[in-house]
Image 1 (cartoon, rainbow, N blue to C red):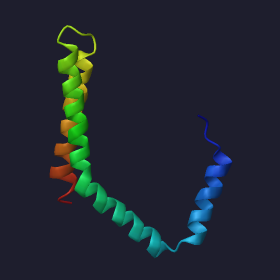
Image 2: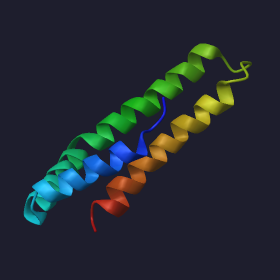
Image 3: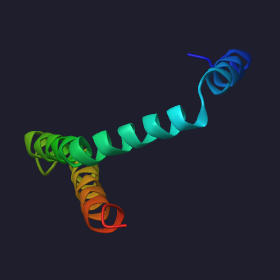
Length: 88
C-alpha cells in the first residue's frame, strides 16, 4: 500500500479549513478521554495475547523470547501510562 501524499495534504488542509480550532480541540480531548478509559485494557489484552502465544509455542520455540519480551513491553506501557501519563 502506498500513500498518496498529495491526497493526504489535501485532506489535511480540507480538515483544517472546515473545522474551527475549538472543534478540533474538543475532538482531540474526546479521543484522549476515550484512550484513558479503554487504552490500558486494550494494551493489557494485547500483552496477555503475547504471553499466551509464548506459552503455546513452548520454551524451546525460537519465538518464545520475542513473545515474552513483547508481553513485558506491553506491561511496561500500561504502568508508564497509568502512573506517569495519567497523573500529569
